[in-house]
Length: 190
Image 1 (cartoon, one colour):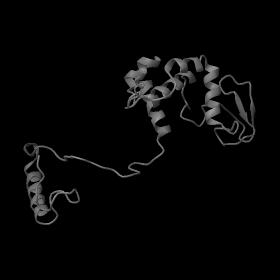
Image 2 (cartoon, one colour):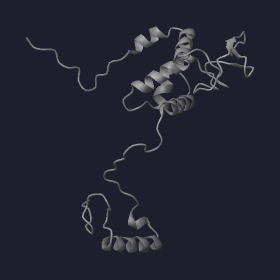
Image 3 (cartoon, one colour):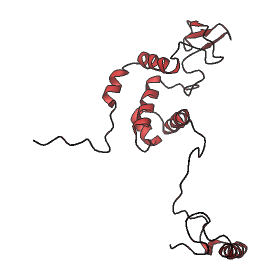
Image 4 (tube, helix red, strand yellow):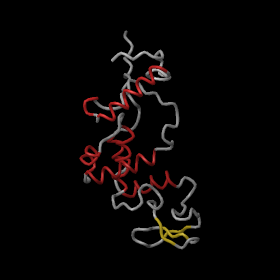
């Protein structure tokens, strides 16, 4: 008896695209899902954050805030604000973005959910911004085999002289790559 093989390193457990389509058959199901995610402790106003809200009869803004006296919807104050796209398309865009190993291009998203490429690009920008919770270079950054600059032949004479002077100074004092593991005064192999 042989044991079954492991699923492999590319295997990820999650919901399939077909399961997602069954979870969100219409716009109302997408609306309920976003409300559960954005308002886990109950509905609150996207303008002022108040929980003194009630349902309204407005066509596009189904809720009314009694504190700031304004209409709002699930889109107000979120990444979905100022968009005319159905919430169902946003659900599929978020799913495709988070399940892709290397991210998804705006061209692929525009083909998959049926929007213009420019719209897909803006959607992805908003989704990335919503998931970005860290500042630039928040943790350690490793850079290997970096090359800064261009070909010497493309430089002006003044830049060539400056580069030569800088190179001689580095050889005398700091080495070619300070702090990169190379010995001072030795040039790394290319």
